[in-house]
Length: 173
Image (cartoon, rainbow, N blue to C red; front, side, top):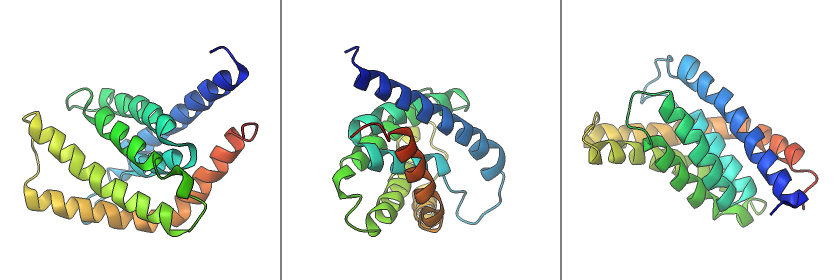
């Protein structure tokens, strides 16, 4: 504690969360307004996937919780719902951190799986809390749609996120 590495990591988390808060605003104001079939893509969740892939499970959990909590504060559902889903996604995807450089398929598969499971996770948590708004078939269609949208967006978002993470962490090993 108190070492230069801790300060850099704290700064990295803060900068990453701030960038993702801007993305939350774009998600809520622009992307959610699009009338796309199978729902709209969750760009925040896709970017969280790439951040967790780049930095690992601990970084994914911390950023996922912070971004999820901010997203919860900007929504009308139960506080902590998105934070819990984003924490789980950040941790789960972060476990594949060592696989990121081996093949180009890892980011695409991780984004598709995280988007599908994140969408299903939101529906499951809402159902557990008594606020279910989607039926089983609708959840399946939205999950498939989220996975497909993430596959389309990954070639554009992944290089941007990786460049930003490299720039942010260029002093770290």
